Image: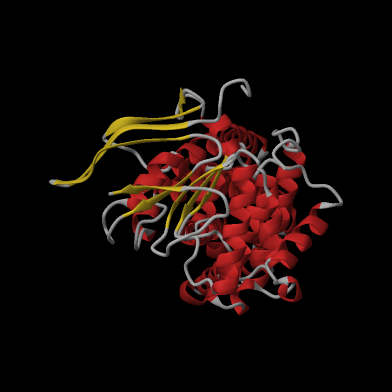
Length: 236
Length: 212
């Protein structure tokens, strides 16, 4: 049995696919995990017109900010579950001990997390945008900016989730760690939607969002993997 | 790499917990074909020692080497040769036994092939779990979940097994299976480091003991 150990390097695509399928099956069977943040987003955005009043001009002015702040908080809300379940049942230990690339494992996990927490926000955003009197012309910019932004926030948030893994009641600490890092995303995200709403080109802020995403994609999995190694070895 | 023997050496491991010296200069070595049982009362540091050996825990002093290299210098190689089963076996209640084991074969460095599921089913059959293979593990009993985790002993080819209380909640036939599997593993040149409170008998192998 010892001699038939095949080459130790499992293909990257295979590793990504396996983790992907696994995380997807788990998430589909625990719908509360990703439905809660989504419901939170819908509720917060739809309460604003009720609280502020139905004046179309006011709503249009504050719509980009509301959409973006709500999206940011919804992503934050979903981050807590990213590694804690795996930590509690020992999966994380096994991943750290596997000899496979921890960064790739992290990347696959974050992508699934985004598909379940970020993508639904993206899909629902035009409907909620209409509720806030955003014009139809701004919808493409809203969706592109949310695509770039929520993916960046998932990646950046994973670092915070990894640093707080295994801590009890880490929600507040997680927010404190992650919020400052996501402020640029928030600023340029809502700026791009505001620009589109006043018929100015939104290319500038969108390009900045894209560069933040590239930076996060390349660095966040490495930082997250390191933080997870420390988190797992610190616990007994 | 294979020229050097797959020997685990642990030198003078000391761990402090606050003012309390939990492990005091623990040393041992484990050569291919050997089984070492760590014994000690609850709270004597058995799990801590095993986690340090795996590279999961950090010792205040001392060195763990595998094939003559300190494990932190050669972590990927060491982790490929290592199978660690802890108190928390990494079994997801929402996934079935087969789904749970798929990722472990991959994490253990075996590329997925059309035969993977068949291998997993053979392993589950050996542990008399085949009829439960597609049930969510949350629906299985504690002993059955332990058997799902132990299926990895059948599935993979790591040289060094580090098993923390592998016999918890197992019945007699489960115990016999694990002993049989350990005997096979040792005969093929593997080595086993384990903690357990039950006495174990492995055919033709002298089980060394380390008292903490």
